[in-house]
Length: 155
View 1 (cartoon, rainbow, N blue to C red):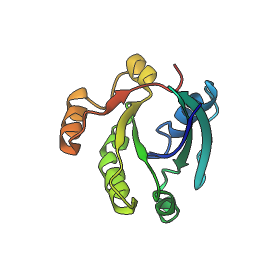
View 2: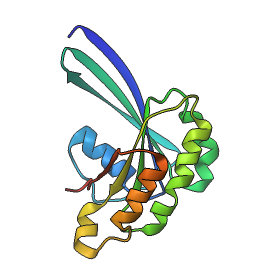
View 3: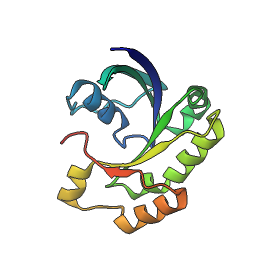
């Protein structure tokens, strides 16, 4: 490997949308059935090889509860990207995405790229979506982004 790069990413979204589950699935390729709310912040690191470079990614999992906003603002600085996550089965988490977007804009020290993620696709397919695809398309247009994906931390 000839080059080494470091990146910082942040996970944003309401409580219980699956931020921590997505993080652990990415880092360890495992899904934990037991839910434990993130208190404050947590982070994990992963190194990956990309072409001729080694890339170290530190992913910060920021608690979604309102009482942690004062703490979250300190972790936006230096971020290279963000994942704005909502739960496809809970419409209120989708409605809160604009607040997360505004918080990201307010506390980031620069313009950072982001990906909008609808999580818990497995449950949405089984029990029905609470967030219509058309509403997601409207939000992507409003944010002027085409970076949207739907996923499941479990499957």
